[in-house]
Amino acid sequence: MGKRHFRPQAYNLLKACVVDRQDGHQSMNRGETMNHVHPLGSGWNRFLKGWIVTAIWALMPFAMPQTAWSQTRGNVVFRVTTISYGGKYADKNVGAVWVEDADGRFVKTLKVWAKKRIKHLVKWNAVSGGNTVDAVTSATLKRHRSHEITWACTDVNGGVVADGNYRIFVEFTEDNSAKSGGKPGKWVMVEFTKSADNQTVNPPDEAYFKNIELIYTAGAATAPASVKGQVVHAESRQPIDGATVQLQVQGQVRYETQSSGRGQFEFQTVSPGSYTLAAFKNGFEAASEPLTLAEGQQVTGKMIQLKPVTNGASLSGTVLNAQTNQPVSGATVQLLRTGQIVHEAQTDGGGRFAFQKVAAGNYTLTVTRKGYAAWRESLQLKEGEHVSGHTIQIIPIQNTDTTPPAPPRNVRARKLGLLKNKSF
Image (cartoon, rainbow, N blue to C red; front, top):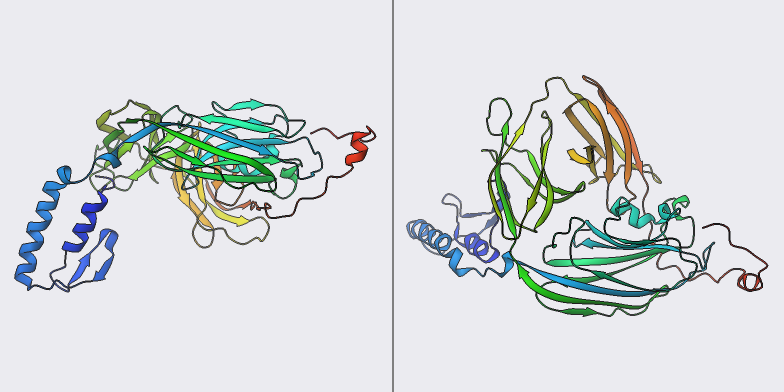
């Protein structure tokens, strides 16, 4: 299989029982070890280990609660009032409200009030890539106001998101923030837990955000879907080990795993909805296909064929902090083709990345890292071409929420009609 999914309770029991016969080290997942010697002799050790492990695996389907393997529908009502900070174009402002999961991954935009100035929503653009699917949109607001937004706990494809922690962000600016070194305007975040229990969150007022309220109402439980399959060589039909397999939604990775030595992969507890099933590995052309999963649907026997690249191109480079010129480690570098991820790499401690045996063609190169504005560029790779030393500078996003409010400028002049705001 790709990645083995353990029920937490059974996994803890297994860790306590599986003892190495030679040195008394406990065999842990991913090669970890810890010192632990069974109090009984080696004979009893071997006997009890085999018996207990067998019993646990046999009883797991009956002994372990199944609630963790389902998800709930739900609805969120979010309210907030924005307050001017006396920016250059105050009280005119542009803003956005969006959702991220606990790992900082973009889920969905709920509301945007911006047209021409949408690029100045630095934080929202960095995480969403400008995605406004199903969002409520309008033009720049002439004054600050209260906002009420609802969210049906679905992603951009309409599928119900998995239970867990989610964060609703609000960002607004009264300045040309994109021209200030990637410095965002004001923003706030409210976190809640999507589960079978209702929840109300009322954070205290902040300098630029008042009357914040989040009401989550749980709905009926839904049954997740699952997908099993195999990645094979397109010509020899031999299994491919270590291929990256993803379920994507509009170029965003929702689920990811690696194929095993037998080329097998598996996704469990997948939210129902429409996805792109994609697989890729260095030395092969990426493959993808649309996949729609209904509630409780179990897809098995899905075969993905990867065609080898015989004389492809290569691309390597470095990701740097645009302000300090220091390397940025842990950045995600992706090559996209027609909107789909076909290659992906993480920068190392020196900010370096590399792609080998890439099929010739036109690509979009993207770089994302939490705390930085997203990078995107178009490039063409020719057959047999080797591009090296490609340097990318990404701009850090600064949090300026702690700065004291600036006094409104020229308020009296504006009231008298003696000063006009420039276009915003």
